[in-house]
Amino acid sequence: MVEMVALYDTLARAVVEVAPADGNVFRMYSCGPTVYRYAHIGNLRTFLMADLIRRAFEYQGVEVRQIQNITDVGHMTDDQFDTGEDKMLVSAGLEGKSPEEIANYYTDAFLEDVAAINIKPAAEYPRATAYIPQMIDIIGELIERGHAYPAAGGVYYDVQSFPSYGRLSGNSLDKLESGHRKEIDDPNKKHHADFLLWRPAGPGRMVKWPSPWGDGFPGWHIECSAMSIALLGDEFDLHTGGEDNVFPHHEDEIAQSEGAVGHPVIRHWVHGAHLLSEGKKMAKSAGNFYDLRDLAARGHKEPLAVRLLFLQSRYRAQMNFTLDALSGAEKTLSRWRRLIATWSAEGAGSADATEPFEKRFVDALNDDLDTPTIMALVSEVISSNGLTVGDKAALLRRWDAVLGLDLARDVGHVREIPEAANELIEQREKARLKKDYSTADRLRHKLLSLGVEVEDTPEGPKPRLVQ
Ligand code: AMP
Ligand code: ZN
Image (cartoon, rainbow, N blue to C red; front, side):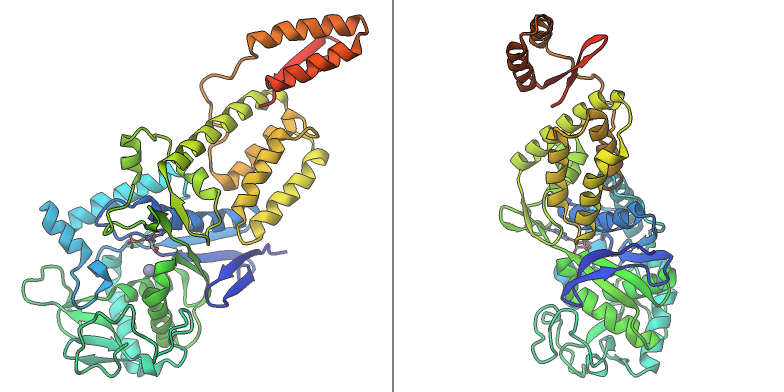
């Protein structure tokens, strides 16, 4: 049986069951970073969503092939393709480095950041500049099939040639304004929503490639069509990105990919809601962003606390980031690690006791990645009276394959039984021997309030920490 995970599909506008179409390998493409700056934690939230989808399948034994691109050309500042400047080139100018040096530096930083928050590495990280021939091929194919035309300002996609243009974003052609609106109106465009696939290099532009339409460079959208088809084939299961990618980036990708191959390419689309800061979308341009380096400099040195914080909201709800909330997540994470370190010595769990919890975990995961419910379930397991500490540790260590919080990390020191508890344990044992069970019981409760549980064994009382 192929396991299915229900996810909110932007195209279907509903939560739908998603599974590998070939019954074997789940193929997914995730829009990656534009490598002209450090990724901020908003970007990381979107990348984490893709990681959770992947881990949900892998947890249930499904192999996943994930591709994530590195945008190292063509992403315009302010997303203005005509009037904006290439983000890579702007940064290169500012930092006095070549675009390639900038791209290499920030690609390495991105890989460090995703590793720091335990995002599993993609199978491949293709760079846009390595796929220019494939982009040129697709553009040629689009022209041949009547979906694109060369004009004075570059090669345009002819949106009127693709009847379902606007289906993903709900932007019908007559309503279309945002996104493409800022492009300079080229009188040679057939429709104001037509967008550039290839743009001629202006005088002085250093980064350019030869093409049948003259020296130039590709649009941002065409790179994802080229890399996804090259590495996943012309039919694959899922495409992810942040909600700002829906239009125009992904709308245009559908038009390009389907237009070029003549049939649907991507079965499902999942978009992560934005991370906000001070109530606004976290963005480099808004200046309200944090990256992992900023956070470390402020003393928040555990990147996995960021991961825990993100798990507390569902991926498709916007969430506002605050440093206070991050401090709360740090405390929770150290507490969980401490408990697990203490409990793990207590032996493996028993399947009978853990089974109902395991089922609830998988159900919540498969229910559109309901991570808030999973977080509540973790707390329930921790304070459960029905589970032994061995059961608890076994469950949480297993779930960490999805949570990715490194819960079994050696915390350096295992919390000791508090001194005051040892005294109470002795008093309780004396009361028990005198068959003064009401005193023994009262002391048992007192010990519990100190986080200590006592098991009476033939060898005497055996204390252990519960929380
Ligand atoms: P970029 O590096 O700008 O190309 O963005 C990389 C990814 O981060 C894209 O999928 C964006 O949709 C996503 N993204 C950008 N800003 C945010 C944010 N504030 N919250 C969540 N995701 C974001
Ligand atoms: Zn993309």
